[in-house]
Amino acid sequence: MKRKRFSRLLFLMLTIMITVTFYQPAQAASGKYTGTYTKTWSVSSNMTVTIKPSYSVIVNKVTSTKVRLQLEKLGVNGSPIYATAPITAKRKGNTVSFKWKDTWGNSGTGTLKLYKGYVKLKVKQTYTARWNRSTLDTSGKYMKIYRKSGNTKMDNIDL
Image (cartoon, rainbow, N blue to C red):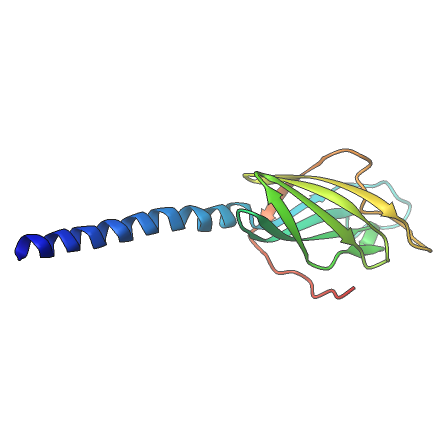
């Protein structure tokens, strides 16, 4: 009787240990890539520049097959501002493929590659809206953008 009880208890403990072992990497992978990635650059201008132009990628959630992200671009002194609504994209390995539409009405496709501490982003604009002043397009090249914070809060944009 004691031997049977011990075997059941051992089986239960092993089952719990295996479940926990396989569950933790999925959580860790999500936290490993989530956060806000931002690249800023300097400009020479006759006017005072209080806000440098920047490009941001907010990675809100990562699973083995999908990534939830949002793109934002600020011009000099925050004008113009381009942003996408939150995007749920397909993930294969460390590569994420997506379609986007921004607040100005531009749209296109993109690829995001996930790495520890940074991402590589390539965005192609396939439709240019009327009165467009800038673009999320990366000119056919991957832009390396470093993680600036663990913030995963997205803007509530409905396009």
